[in-house]
Image (cartoon, rainbow, N blue to C red; front, side, top):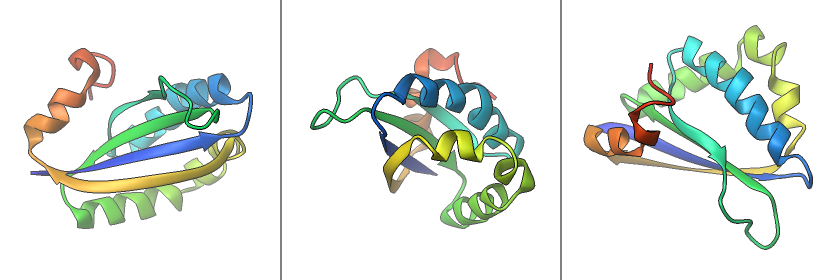
Length: 118
């Protein structure tokens, strides 16, 4: 079993393209450096109530690993002095849901098994 986190971002108007680019080129590689399994990220296909939105899906070995890896990553100088401001400045709000799923479900979510391989 794996712990899967779905995070959705409501973005400030006009920032989605820059946010998605910064996530893909700055945040995702850095998350991986900290051992966080990024399953997928990108722009939402629809805008809820006209708001630009994006998502991030991450997998963890356990709830404890989720907590520990997030603390290590979000407290790191690499994040705080790196892409943090470029990412956070575009977010109006975010929401996360964390669930336990079979490993096969994580693999099924990977985009064609190509884009976010370790």
